[in-house]
Length: 269
Ligand SMILES: Nc1ncnc2c1ncn2[C@@H]1O[C@H](COP(=O)(O)OP(=O)(O)OP(=O)(O)O)[C@@H](O)[C@H]1O
Ligand SMILES: [Mg+2]
Image 1 (cartoon, rainbow, N blue to C red):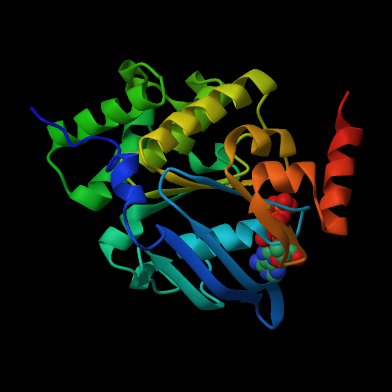
Image 2: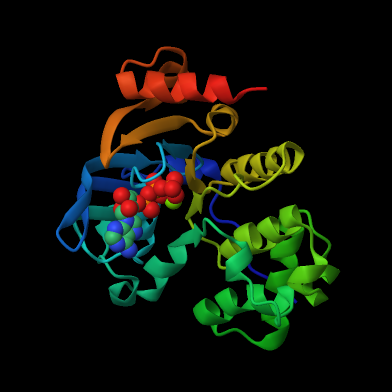
């Protein structure tokens, strides 16, 4: 039986599109009357990674949640390949929902301990394809293999996986199973040790080679350097600096970016 490829069009095809894969224009977000994001303007191309960095409370997760339609109280525009999407995922069409997937900040809470890994990944693909059982199972196996886990892991329960394996399962296989264009990763490496972080970075890089666009939210500036093409620095809901990763990290101009970089250096052993 033939299964659809787990990833999308090759990088060249995505790069040839006129419009960026994802465009964020004049986005402002609120909790009640409290404004937590102010006039955010960003773009992500297929095959590229945009890192969003900033201290705790700067608005990174709120921005991620706006992108995937989980936070509704925002104004401005989010466009997918040039087409504006509704604030709430429930008002986006199923293809728009499929195209942009979110890997949650805390993967441990988002896996049901009583459900096998396979069942947990299958939920996403059933939702989007309504496919037959064998097709769903084939896609689950392909997604596991894409994140370098043996397909028989589908039969395991979450407590039978290591922290890094759980992250790959929930995080990445579940996000990939419905062939998104954009993966929004919220602190996916933060709770993991350095070697697992490196494996996840390598995996994300290979997915980018296949054309996936990534929005990578993190505190970890070392990961930013090894993964992202561009970086945007968020301070209290405002982008204070954005540009190519090497330029921003080697020659930061905003005082806040310099402060973040200095703080990272202090944290080094
Ligand atoms: N449900 C909520 N109600 C009110 N304010 C909220 C809510 N969720 C977040 N906030 C506030 O919005 C701001 C941005 O929060 P957000 O979770 O986006 O930050 P973050 O950059 O992801 O932080 P962290 O690095 O700690 O995850 C913070 O000031 C936070 O207190
Ligand atoms: Mg957060």
